[in-house]
Image 1: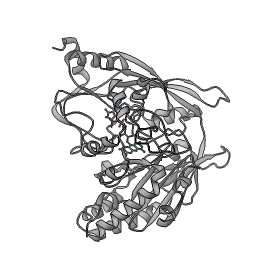
Image 2: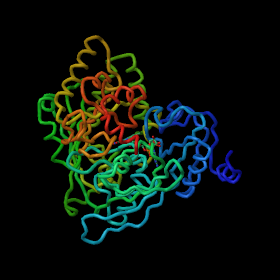
Image 3: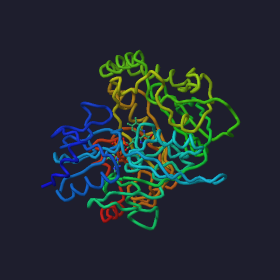
Image 4: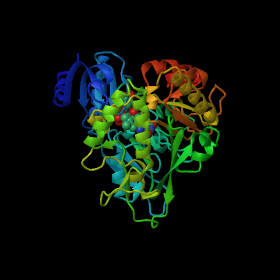
Length: 468
Ligand SMILES: Cc1cc2nc3c(=O)[nH]c(=O)nc-3n(C[C@H](O)[C@H](O)[C@H](O)COP(=O)(O)OP(=O)(O)OC[C@H]3O[C@@H](n4cnc5c(N)ncnc54)[C@H](O)[C@@H]3O)c2cc1C
């Protein structure tokens, strides 16, 4: 039985939602967990330790959650006793060390710190987190747990690549420090832990002097990519990605890199996921009809292509539209941006996306994309539409190779495939899981996809992870 003191403490900050779902950022109808006993809004690292300790004594399952910025019901088992420890309010940032003229330094952050919070905090102190920036509304710990990364082959872009040490509350409720050390399986497991080794409560993170970047976008024909040097399009830049418009047989090729601080006064701010009420209404109507009419998908893709050919940036000091590429600005404004004033994120406008994201070795990029084109053509000729992909194009990202046990971009695996050049991340049909050595993104796929994808994980890595 839990102690009374524990229950009293828990009652103050716990939302009891007995046997109810715990939802993702998409809200009602989109469960991250199907059945949880309660959600504990943690107040400090000590509080996390005491809740886990008590749960360990009671044999109660625990899952940590940051912002619920994930898809599908893959956060928990379906045990209705599960307690969620919500980390949002445990978000102190401290001990920045970055000497003048130094190439890099360190900072300490707690579990609930988001990318945007850390990026703003560092910018105010002339520092940055380099290219480990992923997205604004996500906790750093949540991204590290699940192997999050931005799109880059040249730079360290796994969020875990920036981690120097992790303080994890293990299954016994003990706070354990795991230092970066590639010779230690504890580190290699903790680096992409899937949250299975405990709650990441704190970490020491690598930082750099602040810097500015440019963003540029060009339109490429499908042939230029499918028959071209895909690695060569991505690898030279600090960060780059491709957006495929399969109806139009075109690609948007987006790339970013550092510029001298004095090159431009522009302060470009990228719109990521914000939308006006009017735009949301149009998008909803078109997409809903796309369930039934292929022509709506075509219409949506054509409209979206035109919209996304122009810069999705505003000048941060005036909120005027920026109409010309390249766009210049501070790294975090350009690379992750956020919401425009007076706009809401898409998911608060009732626009919900489904996703399926898999990583393939970049050395097979041409082969994989050609296979996807064949699959689209085959499904279209049978009068079927691959709705989730055709609706708004396909975002193709890349990941620099990074060694750990369960990361999407790990290498030296028993499949004998060359993953050292990095990975290409695509959303596509599950049949390709059998044809290529595809690995799943850990928060962007259904339980069924994970089931199919385990065949492509290195069994030695799985065994080493389990032992850890
Ligand atoms: C709109 C959107 C854009 C995204 N963009 C990218 C992208 O560009 N690149 C990319 O790689 N990913 C991306 N993601 C995925 C995202 O990085 C992951 O889903 C991330 O895990 C979400 O973090 P969160 O703080 O919201 O955690 P939650 O969604 O709350 O949790 C996700 C998982 O992490 C675990 N977890 C959370 N916090 C902790 C902790 N403190 N300790 C241990 N385990 C923990 C949870 O148990 C759960 O299994 C995106 C997601 C969305 C919704």
